[in-house]
Image 1 (cartoon, one colour):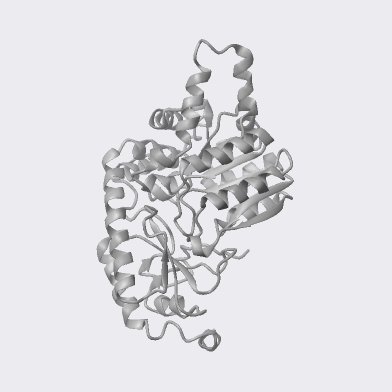
Image 2 (cartoon, rainbow, N blue to C red):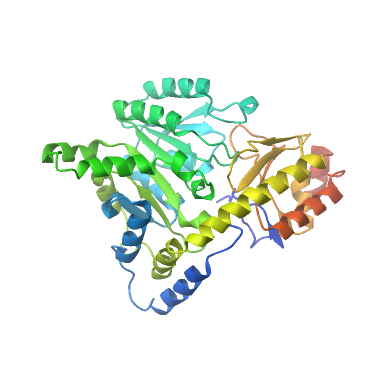
Length: 390
């Protein structure tokens, strides 16, 4: 199986990995300590109900625990969703995370592309939303729509007013709307963009005494699913811990029935509980991302290292840029220096001129810029140089 993502540190000699969008602070110390204790407790089976973790996340998100389903990372849940929902058609914006397409195709769905325009920095403009909704209107009931907010790889953020317009149409047409918010916690505007507060509001309404039992049963008709993970924001990709939030209990029941027992291991559960308790960690993360993202963008532009940077005002922990010619030289030259960046040519709608870097600590970001400056005259010599190196 081909591995088209970043983070391939095992097959390369790497000193700095800018190819994966992981929190530059690393895993919180309290989470590390909890994971170690979890290893010591791993002579027993994990808690199948994830009781402590479920309670902690329910309190953190302010949503009912029964509206949360845990998985082995968000990617695991994407594949399980497609296998359980079995949609005939799946609408995916391009460029975006490749696993949406892969999971849909493996489940037998027909994937429909919606191309976002480079001149709009791959953002959902009002015109793009109108066209996207028109595509949704022509989908069959039971189909699915994926959105990533902020979008990977370009960092564009979809305002809530647009998301709610799309959700309204999906709900009317009985179409599943799956919103991937894995990178949203890096933003100080998380609450402003997230759809979880809408799930929270609806859940609170359904528990109000003015609602009768018949109206509560309508929860099975809800088609909104929000995906998140501990992977990126808490720097623990090796522990594999993701979750989805939905008001649809029937969907949660069906996915759980498709899971094997003891799906989430004990170290991951305990690390997750500890991470949620560290509020200062998130504050420091957001401060660092905002500051270092600006530093990287300023240095790239000041030194003429890229032709264009997309969505510089985003608060995502990664940056998409384009070099001036169709060459992968930059990736190979940096790899020779022990630095990995993400070649984005495998993203639908992008080519060999597009690359993505994550935001790391200042000294690491400075080393990337200095190394990049030293090789910039070699970076774009065309595909002939690549063929000579391969």
